Length: 273
Image 1 (cartoon, rainbow, N blue to C red):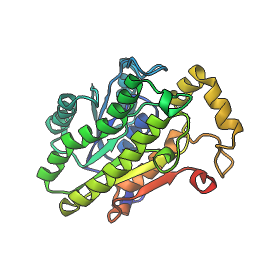
Image 2 (cartoon, one colour):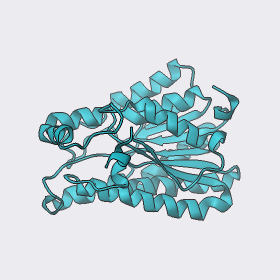
Image 3 (cartoon, one colour):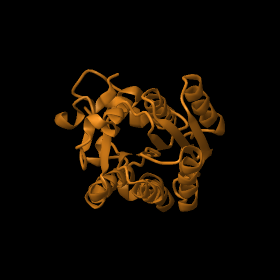
Image 4 (spheres, rainbow, N blue to C red):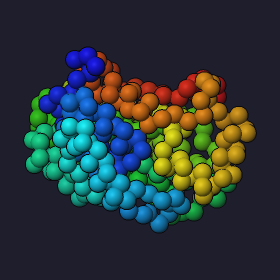
């Protein structure tokens, strides 16, 4: 790893960090020298049909980073709560004195036969977690970045479904499209503070969320496989590390003039579709 990708002295806050992409991001940024503050709801949400992360998952992420030689603090926190997000920001400041990086990664998925059949509660929960949750994380962290006067980098986890149509999960697509607008606006507003804001837009990623969906919604998996909703390159699902590699670039000095972009890590999915 070159010094261009080194994050020594920087502090990264990661939401949804108990497992999957969030855990991978924590390990990757810690290996690059960043100090990590990780949070996760680590509890069920009524409208989510698959098992979410647990407290044990969160503790495992913390332990893995420590075993790899990294510095980390963590707590249970719900991105739907402004108070929880402020508590995460306060934890970062109390433990490490600053915040340089925010990975607004927490998210859920869901399915319905059509958008007009989505239950009201399911729609609201999807937007509350995936869209409003990212905004609340930014709202808590950005003032700390501004006060620090060192600039910063925010990476919001969106999806290919934030850049194209999302049949069978219109509420997910609506939330992810909303993240694109949030990213654009924040990039514009925060440029004077040298705070960069970008999204990563993955295709399907092999993760506990994907595994959980495949168990409770097997017909979705069949539709994905058989209606040509596949990637251009010959890979069905990416690994979390594939997304972490892109995130590391975005938050590093190698991308110091990159802001306001959508970065597809999609194996050509958007080109094909």
